[in-house]
Image 1 (spheres, rainbow, N blue to C red):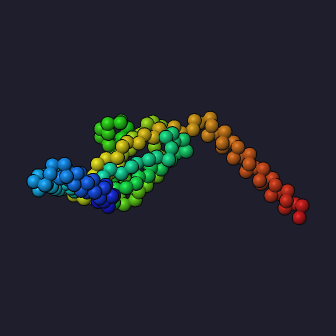
Image 2 (cartoon, helix red, strand yellow):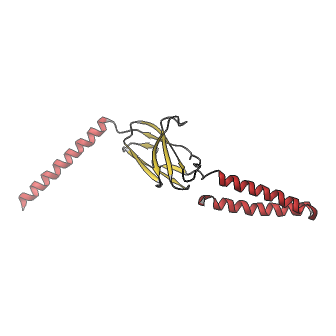
Image 3 (cartoon, rainbow, N blue to C red):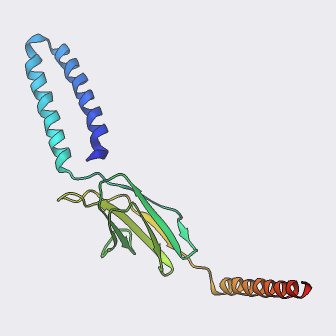
Amino acid sequence: MVARTAPVRHFLCGAVVVSAALAAAFGADQRPRVLAIVGLAVTGLLVSSALAGPSAPRLSADTEIATAGYFRLTWTSGTEPFELQEASVPDFRNPDTVYRGPDRASVISGKPDGILYYRVRSVASSQPGAWSDAVTVTVAHHDLSRALMFLGLGVIVFIAIVVMVVRGKRIE
């Protein structure tokens, strides 16, 4: 509800301006009727806004292609707690809830290669909020030859360090 206070305030200011303009345009004898209609419209919009539930959070990923084995999803706005869902298809058939709680970020790891879709919503009220726009993350791990190359470089660096330590010990 906090995230919607500013738009409601702007709407109310606009409604006051429109009602004043309509009342002036229709003359003094029609002012009560114009004000009553505008008042009913404002009341209806405020009630429907209150019943609509929390607004949709904005979801983002720190990368579109995750090669490091993990990635971070963050979301802003909305009211705590949140529900984060993951799906393997864009229409979210059979989604998995991967997080439910008050945090505004989640680090995802251990996923196999492929394309994953995520969405989040606020579940603070009795009526859950709207889903965010979906975010797509492609998981593409390094291939085996590249991983073996990194392992080989690591072994070479380790041996070089051991040789330097042993040589340094002899010089003393």
